[in-house]
Image 1: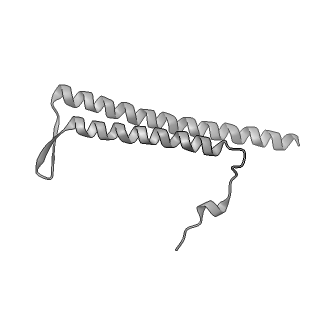
Image 2: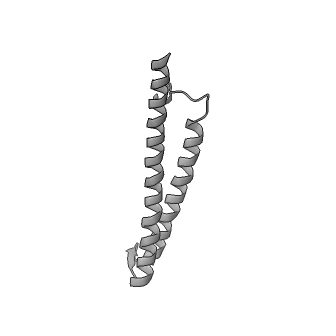
Length: 97
């Protein structure tokens, strides 16, 4: 009984560490996007895309948006992982060929 409790605590710590790393990564993506947006506005950075000049702030906004989407996805993942009915199953990793 004691080993099962220790295993559950270890799994919870592993889940918490993974969720924290994903959350920190998503926050870092948001910060990089906002920083690049500000830098592009200050230094007037432009990129050539399909023959047109696009301001660098647009790319910063896109990266920030993707970071926010990732942050929200990590929140949904955290809620799904910590449900009492969730469990690991190899059938979740089967590929349909």
